[in-house]
Each structure stands twice: as C-alpha cells, then as structure tokens.
Amino acid sequence: MNVSTLPNITIEDKSMFCFTLSIKNDSYIYLCENELDYVKWIEALKKVTGYEDLNTIYEMKKKLGQGKFGLVKLCVNRKTRREAAIKIIAKKEMSEKDYEQTRIEIEILKICQHPNIITLYDIFENQDYYYISKKH
Image (tube, rainbow, N blue to C red; front, side, top):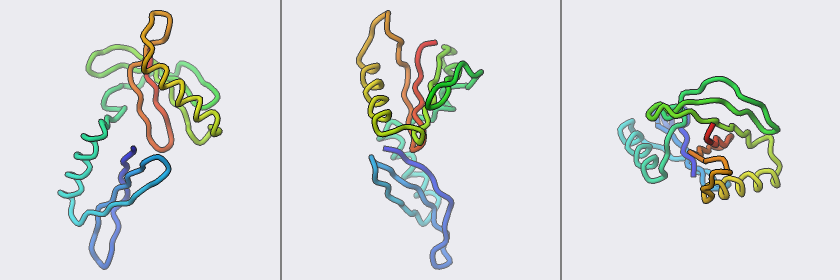
C-alpha cells in the first residue's frame, strides 16, 4: 500500500485537498474539503500502514556503486548513527520477471538471519522505487 499527496484541485470554486491510495495495481483518489481532515487522514493512513519516510530515518551519503536497476548509496541512521548501504531500485527499469525476483529476494532477506548473509535493516517502497537498507 502506498499513500501519496497530490496538488490541491478546485471543484466548483472550492479548493480540495487530495491524496491517492495505491494498493497493488489499483489507485484511488481521495478528496478532503479542509486541510485539517486531510492531515488527519494522512496521519491515520501512515499509522496503520507502518509508513516511515526514508529521509527522516537515514541521512544519505556518497554513492557506493551502480547496478542494472539503480544505485547503492552509503547512508547513516539518524537515530542510531549505524551505517548502512541503501540499494535504490527503479521499478520502471524492471521486467515482470525482474520485479518478481526482487520481491523474492526481499522476502528471503526478511526471514534469513545468518552471519554469512547480508543483514537486512529496512525496506521502503513507493510507486517508482524500492529502497533496501542492508548492513554496510
């Protein structure tokens, strides 16, 4: 599930606050008549979906490498000061098979805890990218 904000729109001379809710391949546009309702909806959706913003958790540092679908950057957790490598994967560059293999890799990393396997810290996803944070 992904929540994203949209520019305000005007309907019959009334400004509306907008956001989209994307679930799998479906997207729904929601309109709020006032900013307070809009903020309440966004905060409630963030809470129930476990939403966290990558940039509030990590400070991005230098580029570590480039791959087929994106790049890897060094980052530092703002709270723990722990270094991590964030793999940024552009979904638009992926075939359906690549997309499925990435989903499988993520699921495997979630359940595997072993000294010889890279430790997975966090996974962030939006409509365009995967952000996979691993031990550096």
